[in-house]
Each structure stands twice: as C-alpha cells, then as structure tokens.
Length: 296
Length: 278
Image 1 (cartoon, rainbow over the protein chains, first blue to last red):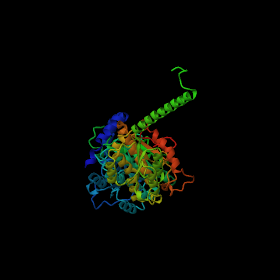
Image 2 (tube, rainbow over the protein chains, first blue to last red):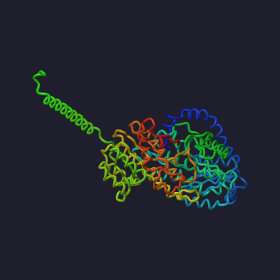
Image 3 (cartoon, rainbow over the protein chains, first blue to last red):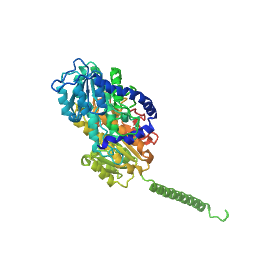
Image 4 (cartoon, each protein chain N blue to C red):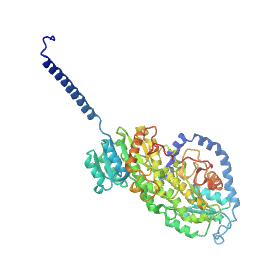
C-alpha cells in the first residue's frame, strides 16, 4: 500500500523544524517506557483465562465491566488500545474491516471472552447503523474512534494534488467518527462514564502547520472542529467529547520513519490514562497523549 | 529693443497676453502628454472573483470595477446573472466567465484560457451553507457534507493551484479566500452546522499550509472573514440582529485584502481588521 510510508518526509521535516523538544522528551522517555512495555505483553498472557475450546466460548456481555468500542482495532494504536483496555478489565467491542485477517486480534479474543470482534468499515454508514441496532441496549462508557488513514502519499503535494483522495480521507477521518457519535449517542449517554474519544493528530493543528500533507491535515482540523462543537452540543447530556493526539507512534501508518517513535503500547497506556482522567470540563479540549493541551 | 522702439501700449499688451497664453498652452500640452505616457506604462490590476453573480461576490465585482481593475467575474450561470451582466455592460473592464468551482476540469480550462494573464488577486468567494436541518445532530445528512466540502474547500484549493502561476506573475500576488468565524474552533458556540464549520476550518488549514509553501515565490495567502452579511446564504439563519449590507462589507474587506503582506500571510482577518483565532 503506497500510503504506508507516506509520512516519512512529513514527520522527518516535522521533527527537524518543530519537535526538538519532543525529540528530546521521546528519547529520554523511550528507555523507561521500553522497559515498561515488554512486561505488559507477558502480563496479558499470564492474566488470560485458560484455553477453551471453540464450543466452550460464548460471547459474554459486559458482566458489570465498563464497555469500550474501538474502531480500527486490528493493528497499530487500535490494537494496542484493545490490549490495554482488556488488561484493565474492560469489555471491549473491537471493530475492524477484516476480522478474518486480524490474527493478533483473533488470538486476543480467543483468550479473552471480553474482547468481542465486530466487522465494521467506518465509511459504511448503514453498517454503523446496523451495529448500533445490534448493541441497542448496551451502555458504552467509551466510544473510541481510532480508525484513521493518511489519505495517501504523492497525492497531497501542491502542484500535483489528486483531488479524488479528499473524499476518502474525509470519509474515514471525519464522517466515520461523527456518524459513530450520532449512532451510539444513546449508548454513551446511558453509561456511567459517558465518553466519546477521537484519535486526532497535531498535524491537524493550524497553529503548528508548516506545509505538506494538505488533505490529511485538513481532515484532522475538520474532525477537531466537529468534535469541539459536538462537545458543546452534548454537554447538557453530560457526555464528554474528547480529542486526543497519540504522539508519534510506531505503526504501519508511520512505517520506516528514522525517528524515535514510541511503541503503540506506550501510547495506548498513556491514552488510557488521559481518557480515564477526563471530566466534563475537559470536554472539547485538544489533548495529547501526555494529557497536555494542543493549540488549534 | 528699447522701450521707445517697442510698439504702442495696446500692441505691447497684446503681445504680453499672447505670450502668457502660449506659455500656458505649452505647459498644458507638456503635462497632459506626460500623463498619457504614465497611464500607458501602469496597467490596471486584475482580480478574478468566483461566485460573482450575487451577494458578496457581486459587490466585490462592482467595487473592483469602479476602481478601474480588470475583473474576471465568474459564476455558474452567467445567462441569469442580470446584475452582473448590467455591470459588465457598464464597464468594459469586466469580463464574465462561466465557472462551477466544483468542476475541476472547468477550472483547468479557465486557467488554460488565461494562461498569460497575471492575476493580482485571486478571490475565492463562492461558498455554500449546506442547509441547517441537514447539519443537526441526530438527523445529519451526510451526502451534504461532501457537497459543502466540494464548494468551500476543494474549489478554493483547486483554484489556488490552477492559478498559482498567474498570481505569481502579477504585481500584488494575492490569493484570498472568504472564510467564516464559524470556522474558528476557539470561537465555537455549538448549535450544529458541522459540515459548514468543518469546510471553513479545513480551508483555513489548507490555505495556511499553502502560505508556508508559496511565500518563497512572494505569493501572499489571505483569509477574510466578512462577518454576518445580508446575502442569500444567510437567509435560512434567522439571526436576531440586522446583517451588514454586502456593499458595506466589501468596503471594509477591500482594505483588509490590501493589508495582507508576507508578514501576515496565512492569517484570518475579519472585516474590521482584527485577526480571528483558529
């Protein structure tokens, strides 16, 4: 897939121009978090229930656990968040486009009946409606819109814009999260935590833009303004709408970048903490994985 | 000649007056001749305006025409653009071109037609609201999002890309896009309108991003917020205060356009000259 390494130049430039502080922080934090991360893998294995046969496994309801729905959960940050929430004892509705190919997610679900896989393409609005209908009576504490795409490499350069890439990136990065919010608003309102989280990006900060990645940036700016306004509109229902930038994470999205990217598990653990600490007064705020505030 | 040799007083008076008249005539001839030469060496600037058949676009066309600019006034349906046709009839420096900014091939064709025309101000004015009920949470009309984005975001981006060389070849080198306070996240007040707001925030981002890349060519990118203006776009929104007449808005916006330099390129400036936060 062409877009897998599209941000090589983007983020290298980003680092050079802006993120000296971020680079130092990442390098300082990296050894600590690398040490913290690998034990997590073992801990997850140790905590898992004994292997069951297919016949013995039945899909379980939350059984009193808080519920999180995560999109794009087959790899990258979504997969790491699925593991994190599962480790934290949540009931996880883990969606992705191709469950049949999501091997790691499948093995996770096989070992943990509280990880339920659902097939979902966030650009398929009627599929979102169908999923919402299926989960009609389930309160969802955290609706986590994580699925996102870059929009493609070599299509977002001034002078050679490929305009048909715009609708696609907007469909995934803006309309997906908005439609999910609209379809699951009652589920979230009926829950204890009432949180809607969208994984955004500092690439969507207009204050910080320096060039390139026009369509991707615009999609993240667009989801920022949509969710910020939605936060205002849903405040009366006590729903917290949050925008969180995950940091620069070592995923397929960022494949091959010669940068100190943080492991997905580290980003996921930090995002978990930020979400856990969210209160209504933080609704609509542009946060990063460290819980700090980003400029629009 | 001595005074004794000079002709009688009446003749002297006549010669004096003739001399003065000739001097004045020669002076007038010289100065007018100089003026004609000056006019020939300073060409009028050119502005290309989208959505120029009504509202703010029409008033921009009027104002720039009155300033003596060459106005390339585009709109989707010139045949029914009566006010614009009347303006063009009055001003030979106004040219009407048919253009739908969502038709990317048409933009390319127009740019090809004007290949050798320097454009001092490219004015991305065409914009749509996308309705109100379509943008209410709980009844969102998602196909409308793409229509709004096509006009308000992709249109200006395509125009800027297609006419970048024309702008770069001009004296003023400005690409101006009409945005909105609704595109400011910091100033957000909720109450739906997600698609329109998204389109304006997105175009703000795209234009600011562009401003960073084209500065080295001397091209200035400006975003202008016209305020709440009394146009057809605003009709569905029943605001509880009187809206600004378009002509008045434009009289405030043209100085704002003039004020853009490479120092404030990529900023959003309101009709009152104040910047608008992201």
